[in-house]
Image 1 (cartoon, rainbow, N blue to C red):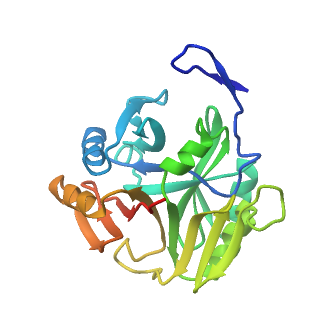
Image 2 (image 1 turned 90 degrees about the vertical axis):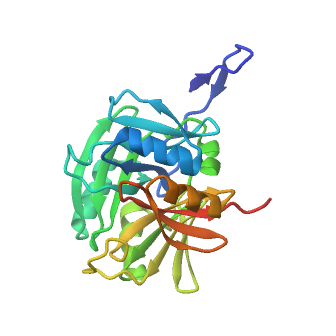
Length: 269
């Protein structure tokens, strides 16, 4: 158990939520970028985020929405020769087991598992090349607040949604019958993943494995909920980004560094 200290100065006990009790679902999203300051400026303008440093060092930041940590930024793309991209991380009870399962099923392990107290992480790719991460350990403080402030869901655009669902299901224990596991349903040709009743991921077919455009190749797309889709799109254009597609409820944007993400209209209560 950990303690939080509110404004009145009286510590409150809070239960630490870990990947042993919440697993298989997206638990974090991270952006690999080249220029930390430019990245912060762009997302502050488009999504209204604020920032704080982390113990990992000067190249890393945590994004805050209304004081709640929602995403990580790692300005290491040039240093580590990594692609500029948003990546979802999925909660797992054992990172070594998850990595072994990925390899056994034709995926690849790019980085890790590495120790990032209070947990361990690895960066992986499925057998169609879509990049994703796994996280073992404590989840972000106030887990339910993160679920509300974080992305509405993540979507995998891939060659074969049903084949991908089998791959991720076996790696992440989806629909395994274990207490707390995610549920998988097939709706309108899509695979829909639910955690505690909430839609947290979708998988659809249509991506082309050898397409020259990265937005067409298999990839995970991060959807951030916003109050004003059009406003975000205009802000992205004003601050060096671009709009790939836009309608009243959703816009696919590219930031000034080239990373692609989606803003989705927040549903009314």
